[in-house]
Amino acid sequence: MNVNALMDMTYGMYVIGTKNDDKNVGCFVNTVTQITAENPIISVSINKKSFTNETIKKNKKFSVSILSEKTDSKVIGTFGFTSSRDNNKYENVIYRMIDEVPVLSEEICGYAICELIDVVDAETHDIFLARVIDAEKTSNNEPMTYSYYHKVIKGSAPKEAPTYVEEKEEENVMEEKNQYKCKICGYIHDENKSSTKFDELPDDWKCPICGRPKSDFEKI
Ligand code: FE
Image (tube, rainbow, N blue to C red; front, top):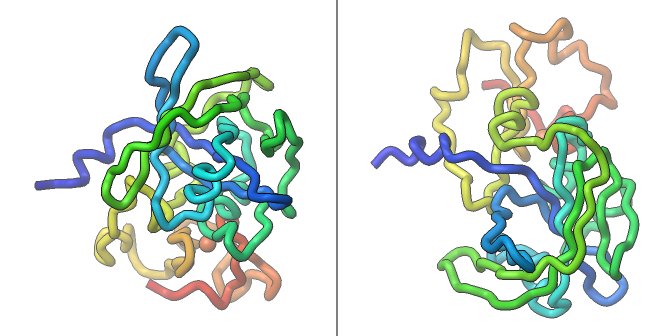
């Protein structure tokens, strides 16, 4: 079986937001699908280890922020590569509360507010079925697809994402060497394509995807 065949399935990019007591909780997903047309129901698959998963089961309400090509890649880094269990992800982003759940204001296309109907067990993940109770388009930006994120922003899937495929070292060595890979999110600083050598990047330079320092990069 060649799981790479599944890479040609298309996905959008979303941040799911919910609330645990007084704390806003959220995660990045690429698995939101509209299931029915009238009085719409959507589904979203979220890893069972995710704090957002536990929190949706308690709160029974969540938001879907639809990311656009203009959404800052730090949003994906913050929501895809850190856990809400020990971080306040909303500290570093612009958001507003709608219907008591957090919705991003970071150049998104729009949002939906959803109420949980059912949870379907899917081994490592749960599929949440939810009714859309409110939705608004907030810009005419192009929606960000997973393919755009992968090809243009050069990001990889978080390890807990349903679409995560472990990349083989040799597949990462695209041209010659002089590539430095973020150990957290997989972003590659490629000296063949950048005007700045890795060693010449300032000491306070951070990974454009997940915000980690240079020390979290390794030469590949
Ligand atoms: Fe990174």
